[in-house]
Image 1 (cartoon, helix red, strand yellow):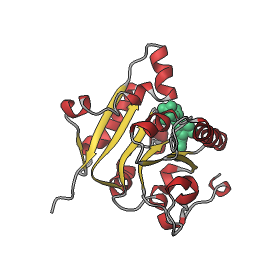
Image 2 (cartoon, helix red, strand yellow):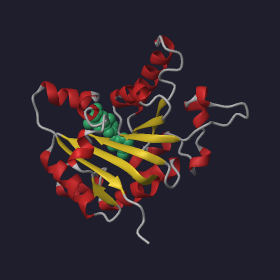
Image 3 (spheres, rainbow, N blue to C red):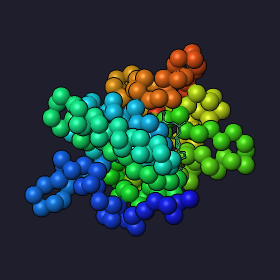
Length: 221
Ligand code: SAM
């Protein structure tokens, strides 16, 4: 249960310098804030690919399962130790938490520029739809932590869930769909499948995927 892992009471209470020691400055403060969050990061494949694509951006994976979180921690530490390039993989980390409950405990308003929801659990039964990581209510929270222009990436191999996530985003007043041109020119998009463990599994089995990629708009005054 949630009581087995510590939850910061506010973003200021999570010591991110422990996650990103190479970004700590002389005053013991961390030089930048986390900008990307991979929600339900699983085994961390996306973070590892993004680490070298955006070496100056801090990113965090959020994962509920204890053993999986520990695995990702070890995987990142091993990459830091063995990388031939100084400082590589220092910009990624993972935290064990329930993202459906605690997103605002970790991020301030407008802090994030990208959020990822890749191959989330489908929760097929109608009575379990409230457990889905994309819902109108949770999109309010994601809109709060995303900055204007920030992007939310979702992908699944379950058609019904893909339609659900897209419909939730379409009807939310704080999100608008990216154009096909914008999707085609975003280098992150191809990683949604190729870099994630789930995406690779779907590709091996020749399965279809369903994406919804939306931008957090500015407040309309
Ligand atoms: N995104 C990864 C990928 O594409 O390879 C993993 C996908 S896996 C099917 C879904 C992951 O979400 C699991 O590792 C699960 O433990 C995690 N998860 C489910 N509910 C969660 C929650 N409330 N908070 C954080 N992680 C959660």
